[in-house]
Length: 347
Image (cartoon, rainbow, N blue to C red; front, side, top):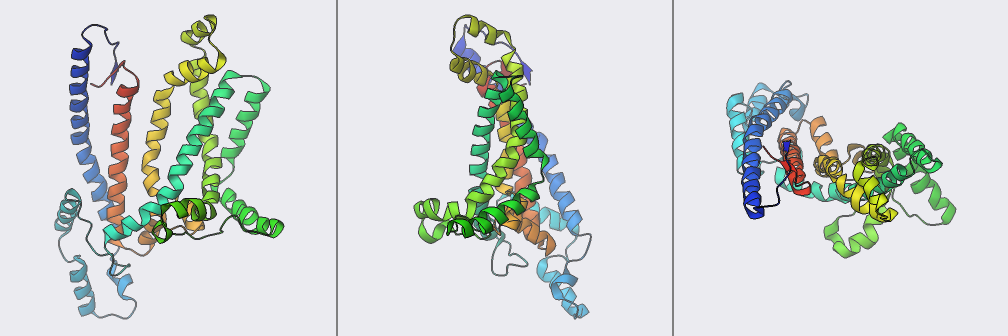
């Protein structure tokens, strides 16, 4: 990418050229990342086959005939290159109909569909709350830079990110889900578990089940992530607050809210967008620790279970989907640069 000022004349012509340049850039990046994606899939499949999973699936008592029959059933008797080609073909056609080795009777697509909802129920609210709160705190901290409020906010952010994620989970489960109900005579949060959306419908789930099962892990996620995001956004806002356009806006008598939310925030959108878009892959993967300790059946928990149980179809498909989403999010970041900042030219 390069920065190039746009000219006022010939706006339609410039926009058309820029649109063509953007699509050309997207196609170039897409084809550039195809070998990267294929390499990720190759490494995952090779790593899984370091040890033969058939012995673990059949147990201790087995015969050579049973081992051979099981390998044939699972498709492990084929040469690795053929297995790799078959899996790539299924990915290209979005065919996730292969049966899970552990969840018998369920296809990979069915398992994935079941796990996406719980992961999004945690990660989407966490991302929205973390971004809004962190940007607001960063704006205040940058505006009052060097004063007591700025110092207090920075210290709070450092303390928040210095404590282990696991410590927050343990304290949250103990005090909010175990100790608090004894004090108030009711249980506002669940220690573990999850209620499906399909059971009572979306409205009932949002009003009744989501706060009980998901609000506590979401709050823990926000507290941990706010420390990192606040420090990052504060550095961005401090840099923007010293630029000439801020001084000019103040000299012209612009109000403090206008300077902060119109001028400063608008020009800081590129690093903010970068931070948010980079987080998109984790919306699907979910939080491994939160899902495990709160027994929420999301993508992260399912992937860990599949790795432990050597469920190759689940591990391969989930990893390929995660890699594709991560690559797409990086590409989306560059495209959004050009949308937010007219000076950005994709080349």
